[in-house]
Length: 510
Ligand code: BES
Ligand code: MN
Ligand code: ZN
Image (cartoon, rainbow, N blue to C red):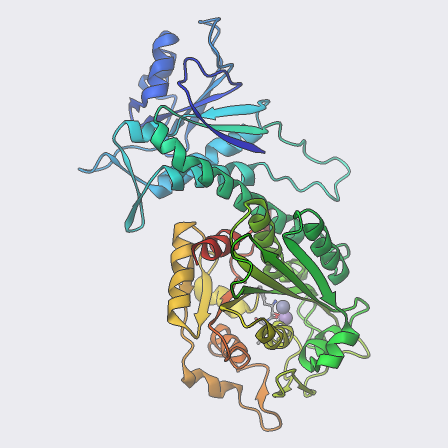
């Protein structure tokens, strides 16, 4: 999809759809201009209550009145009812609701291009309140691009009668103010790249586990590299190479499966940052988690195909960095394996030696994520990283603690935690910090090894993070538990693409 910024007004911009806005009973400038040209067709929608005052309410208007109009259709979108004294301050929540309603409607309409007049809010003297901050046209343009990309994703791969591909392929951010348009240009590029990274993450997550195997992911890394104008390189370690490195924890998970485990290494070097120390991303890529010999119950076990969503978000973030030509140096490590029960699978009670030399008693083969991640965290040391952030659908306990809204964040370095929290707020892909206190560490004690791989019934998300922390002592590290945020269950079943927006914002801010 192409995103452009253009200085033009609604009465001269030719487009298949002009998207204009109402704020309560008020038509913003472009809506008002069309209303005057079209004999009051838009204000009538308001006076007759055809347009509701909830953010995201919308009406299509096809008007035969003025034949020379350059817009073929109009969509009037409601931003919400002004509240209280500060009636010129618009909440970012209402705005994001309106943008995603608009983007969804466009994606289902027979329009190839749309001109969006959301910049009218600034001309009207309004401001956007986002958390504790006021944000401007750059933030708005980024969110618009993300919303349009997300709305146009369709899963088609394994359907014989897939939904039609959206026609929308061009979105114009229109403004009458040249200064604001300067901010908008890079923001559209960034938002478009983040949106496309999110969709790639959703696609990898949604693919069935008989297609999306560790080998499939390794192939994806090669494809990303081939389309990167040599900015991204990709290679991977097979089980034999991991054995040489002493990755006994990783291999204990992979060995019960017919699919070979793989550790992928992608490196993105944006110009001017090429010699800086890298930020490292680590993704949990369990392409299917049966639980192993500690077999999971059958109900919704299919959703364990999403157990590679951490890996998928790392792929999506790398794709976004490539597309926006970000000036950063990032290494991505993806730990891919399938967790299966088998005659040669790990058993409860088995003790393995990790690459770090620490021994682990596997008391539950379903706590496999931390086993593939711990060796990958040790491997990360060789890049002398500025920071390491791992992303994992690690614990059901995190879903109990935080539900489906916030990603769980743990860190051994508060400045890093603060940057990630801020990036989450900025991009509306929020995380919430959880404790990583020493008190929890002793839950991992084992009578027979340096540690157990589970920490008992209480604080399951915390003890999982404590386990990882023992392998991340040599650099500033953070862990994102996305078990509650990576996918939707039920009727909307599907990967969300989180936390790509958080990660990309963090990396380009850092
Ligand atoms: N992939 C799961 C975590 C998970 C479960 C995420 C359900 C989302 C929904 C992970 O490998 C796992 O099985 N964790 C166990 C850990 C336990 C055995 C200590 C869990 O959360 O039950
Ligand atoms: Mn598991
Ligand atoms: Zn798992």
